[in-house]
Length: 195
Image (cartoon, one colour):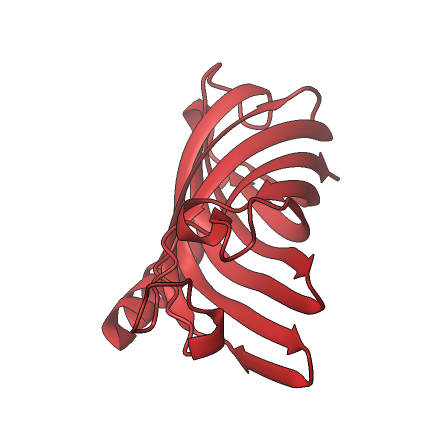
């Protein structure tokens, strides 16, 4: 798995360094998100589908023909409290997305995209005199679609997938005897702002 981390980081660095000379447009921005846990993370034994929230920052590097690279950082927070026990999951993700604007002009109208990166997920369990935590690091993949209403405002729906494997026996759902793999951290709906 370490090779996958290095590959993702290497591809990100290569993409950023190699395209800077031909880029037509640069803008910086951020995102504020509402998130829903997906896959095993959304089960009753984990977060029980409780929604979370997130924030992030990004840079849009635009090219001719509606193509863009978007280096981004995303932070998402989930919490479930039940019977005096708190389960928290925080994800920190850094990666690069490729976006294609369907109208052929960067930062205008609808777009679709996909991305790769590296993320860490901090799993915490506290309550009843006990606490435990683990922060596995894995590569992730993402797909998204969005709409830039103006050059400065837009909305995006994004799905991220990563096989986080927390080393916490107490966080494991009932019936599991080994470390669980959390395959779909979140589906996020974001408000995007750029300047």
